[in-house]
Length: 159
Length: 117
Image (cartoon, rainbow over all chains, first blue to last red):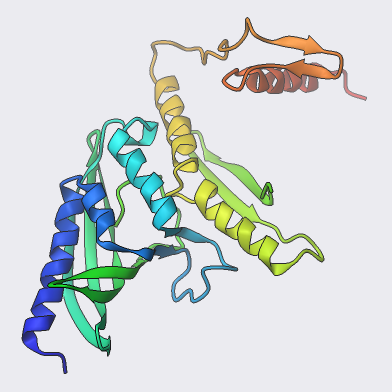
């Protein structure tokens, strides 16, 4: 069983990530990722293959940085007016998977507000984290959206 | 290399609801890497969170909202009208022209007004 202090540090790291997204600090959000980091939202429950099965998002650092630029420019129609979010992260369970590697599973809810319309996303997220000094970096983040195989309206702010 | 192995299908459900599905197809006999690249490309250009497709859907929705109001009963497809020119092998227009829309609706009118055979 993981010691409480490490568990708590990882919880706080996940809360920081949520806070950066809610504050619109997308560049700082991207800095949490390893240069080889992957952000993945599968399109099917329990999807194991991101290569031969389509995903809602399967992006490496290069594409994510384009996504971040787009969010910061806020010129895209779907970002007009800019949506705002509240990301909640809960039920966090951390497992140590290597000397400096951890897997954190959590439930999440993200509420998004834009132009008098409110949308809600929820599901489970899995972070593979590596230690980086006093903090961590994201090697991969997988978001299993509750309605990933349902009909979805345009999605904007990362979950 | 282009990765145009996707097909978007627009399905009208009711007067104010439209479903858009995107499919990826595998080219018979082509290497796996080609299909995997097409899958990756599909996510980038055609998923609900795509940086391209999400704006297309948003535009569709906002056109629908606009048309549901009394003001401005027209959808304006005039952009690029003054740049259209007809070459020997067909029409040519600028990248931001709405000529494809004009041509598509003209074709629709032609089909709808053609004499039944």
